[in-house]
Length: 271
Image (cartoon, rainbow, N blue to C red; front, side):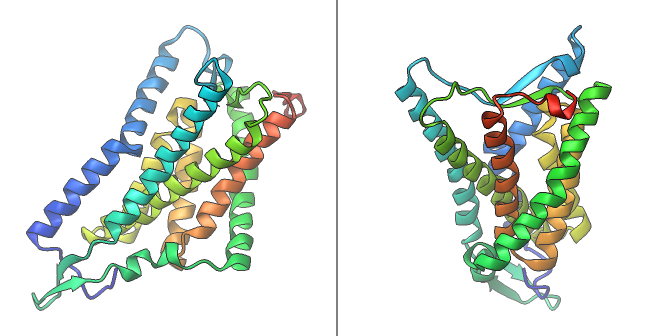
């Protein structure tokens, strides 16, 4: 958003607050609340949390073709969340300048991060972000299992179905698209439009990201909060979202397909 438009009038502010409440209730906000309750339930269990397990992608039906249809539906929901956020960003809003002059803010530059795609640069930076997050994240996960801070995370429980790999790729793409568009691009933009400072907006975004990973354990929440800070800062500095989507996709693809190819054997990690 242009720095000229500093103050949303009352009607615009109310609209933004309502929009945030509605979108977060539909998407990752309610996911964060449910994850918190699932973490509390796990901590209250007599079984140590590092002896518990959680699967991220699981079969949803006994019949293969129905399961495939449900998996595709789940991916469509995630893509829908992302496109909902983009649609909302496309609507022009009224802001006032320092001189109390009302001006309608164009939505074109708000959508620029998703409209600009520089293949080589975005792929390179996405890969770098994946490495920056992925390797320390794996070490944190191994340490968390050993010290009893995290559940054992099973990326997929598909039983070597013919469509397993394509669906994992599609689900990973949908998840990366939804998270980065909603949690980073849309949420940070809206928080800034409400007058929050850059550090505050990035922190709220990171807390949201961490919250809906709490079902895996407190360490997963912390790790994703740190990821959110890094991704939020990158978005602020560059105004680009595709490297974040690509980086997130790469992390998920390595985790999901790697786990499937290894048939769940992670003994080489010492866990």
